[in-house]
Image 1 (cartoon, rainbow, N blue to C red):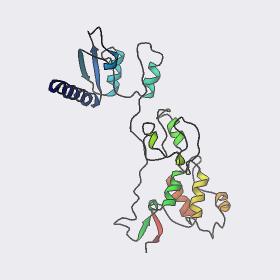
Image 2 (image 1 turned 90 degrees about the vertical axis):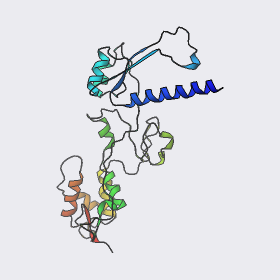
Image 3 (image 1 turned 135 degrees about the vertical axis):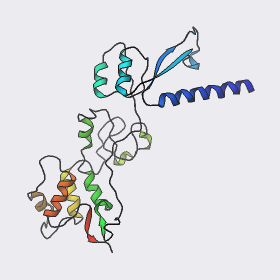
Image 4 (image 1 turned 60 degrees about the vertical axis):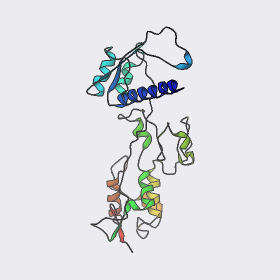
Length: 250
């Protein structure tokens, strides 16, 4: 029994060391060989030789794979690399998901030491909701930088790895990519202005109805309205806000 426990502990240590090595940036398996002729399927793959090779960067690692210097590379492929190996019978491309996400982060503190008499706009829930309506997530994912190699998230939960933890009551898509349309702040410039008008970010004296606000000429550039454009809109429409709301804190 003691010998079996010792073997188990040794196996765990070896596997852990291999994991640590492969977790290093641009570390790849240079060669994997086995001389064993009969291995029980239930015990998984065996190898008699494992050699790790390090590369300076991901591009060099990919080139090493193409040149048969390594058998496996651990770094995700860029879209150009992915497209270049599709249909190559000598290379097997496997799906890969990690916990990486892209975000636009803002300071949501009530105020700061330089403007203690004012409340920051980003501290207001309705302002953040309006900003969310100005981010076209689907176009960002389909655009040239990601080229579709990403999964949209509407909650702070990485997908698709943690889909079991996602609230689909506030998500645009389900686990299979089917449209749910349950995200209340999807890309919609009109809805952004509606949220701001409803919560008195625009003067109701100048714009007594939402329709009058939407019909007003704006200095915003054509296409997607950015944060700087909205700041200009607010200043032109009679209530200054941007980094700070105009009303002093009580």
